[in-house]
Length: 312
Ligand SMILES: Nc1nc2c(ncn2[C@@H]2O[C@H](COP(=O)(O)OP(=O)(O)OP(=O)(O)O)[C@@H](O)[C@H]2O)c(=O)[nH]1
Ligand SMILES: [Mg+2]
Image (cartoon, rainbow, N blue to C red; front, top):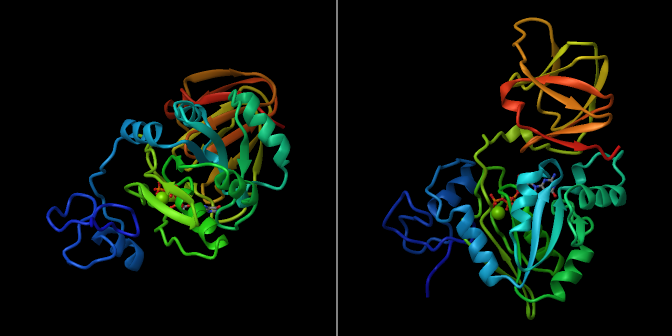
């Protein structure tokens, strides 16, 4: 029988250290990468087995029901485009409910996401970590066959499966971490007699990965009142200003520094016209709500950012 790493789902092998599933030991339960990640929090870069297209293909061929997981700070056009490529019967599951600010009313938020991104299917809000709102998800899984959880890396798929499994009195024990691509192959988990779910490797993006973009706990929105042409820096990497007095509210991890800057101000030459109450969506980070109609100027790395009407 082929042995698989219980952490990431890869077939164990002892031939190629650069390929997934490598362990020098014959009777290992974890591959070397997962062993180091689990025991020493050592993050080893490894050649991935699947591309995004291959993951998508695999899901479209095998899954009868798909739960597409995405976290609250990572809902944008790219993610929804990937969701729409899923051909099976599907649900959009917004994860990490525990860090959604209290000011956001959950039902209103679901309606807003459905409208903004034209999602016709049911949308669920859950927290794998806190096991909140998972009852409906459990019911849907129990009434479906071949349920696959998929989504971008770090969206919380494996954490959610571990929590579901605990809820059924079991221990799936899939390795979870903030490192991208923790799960490397499909993992079949038995939840109960005749009830199985499949974990899948996360889709990857080209954008740079930042651990601090993931809040450790409940997210506190930060509002800055800005005067005309005052420049705000996001993590000393992205810059934004408005041509009129305005209010910017940042829905991003509180570990990301957001400040007005008064020296070494970069020239912002990209202008975007905003309607009243718009969001600027920044991939893998979150969004900024801008209250008044204005023209904003942004640094080059924001010039193609997504603009949407705000839910507030
Ligand atoms: N606050 C919070 N953090 C969560 C939740 N679910 C997952 N996380 C954290 O998010 C990170 C990624 O979780 P994983 O379950 O490994 O994500 P994944 O989607 O399986 O990622 P890949 O295997 O890389 O595709 C971990 O640090 C988790 O602890 C949640 O409901 N709330
Ligand atoms: Mg995973």
